[in-house]
Image (tube, rainbow, N blue to C red; front, side):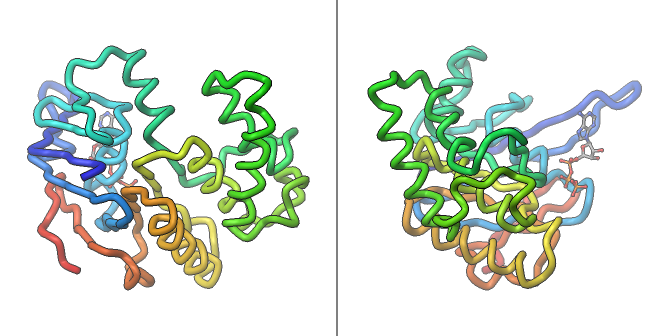
Length: 228
Ligand SMILES: Nc1ncnc2c1ncn2[C@@H]1O[C@H](COP(=O)(O)OP(=O)(O)OP(=O)(O)O)[C@@H](O)[C@H]1O
């Protein structure tokens, strides 16, 4: 299992008391498979991703990423784990306006501390990933020269740059029309298979989840049993 959450509880301060955002949640995602998490607004979906991403430490339970138990890791150790093992795709593609599509990806490799000698390899990997998301001929374009769907593809390719074991995706299609949204979901499923990631996809949209390996429903912080 590349990603395991076991009996995870998360609360936030809420006036005098605490609000339970995740209530004894269990989730196991094998390499090369995609689990979709659906559920109403405020049910805890983003909290689930934040805990899986090691951005928030839960009150209780166990989170295991790529075989590493995260309990007791320092903030610096968690940052290293994130950089090496976790790819995150947020709702809005957070691309740097002055960089080309290829450079958005290359910058990730440099952040990982690779030396000049390895930059050529990073450049090659960036081109390969852009080709994998159907943007081979857009590698030299800046974000304003790309469509919304193309920007989201760059965002996804960037998340894969450091070969993560776990890919966490939050509402990737919310800014896209139905057809482009479906194409992005197909792409995520294909990349999950080809790259062997354990992918968690949070979405409001039940419309095109047929390709997911499992669909879990979040309600009031509880994750219901698999439904497909
Ligand atoms: N930082 C925070 N402090 C206090 N309460 C929070 C915080 N973040 C989220 N919450 C509360 O926790 C609950 C779960 O929120 P979360 O954002 O995880 O839900 P969600 O399912 O992702 O919602 P949406 O679909 O609207 O993004 C909500 O009741 C929310 O108000």
